[in-house]
Length: 160
Image (cartoon, rainbow, N blue to C red; front, side, top):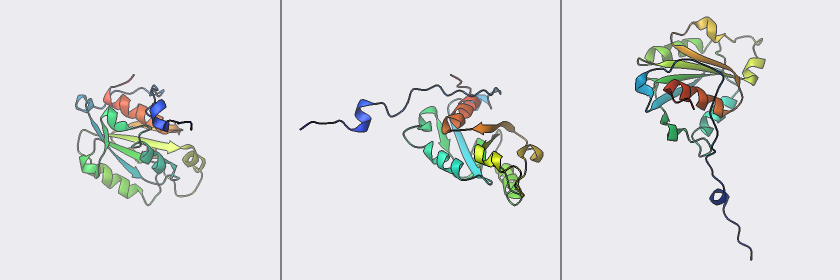
């Protein structure tokens, strides 16, 4: 009888990739170098970003090794992740969430390819028209969760 090893024993589960994004912006603050707490808010995405937020906590990406954690409420968060293109009914909710963020904070907006295809759909609001106060990154060419990790590491000043 031939023994075969389990999947994780012969191969590293956490990959050794470089998390880099072609965006340059200054790090949010010196106090975020050790840990960063993020709060994602879905304002009208096509549900693919919600699955990717869940995948960030899985062993494949495991953002906890970088010191990045999810916050339960916006009052405990350092970064607000705006997922998708805001609908008209979600704009007041988004603005109230921004008002609850403690300073200093940053806002990162992420739109997937499916969200960009629905630009002409009625009810969508451009995130640039809202003039959010601390919007540091607006990702429009999102493809996989590694893009989010790259932006968050750039915010922390841990660019590899």
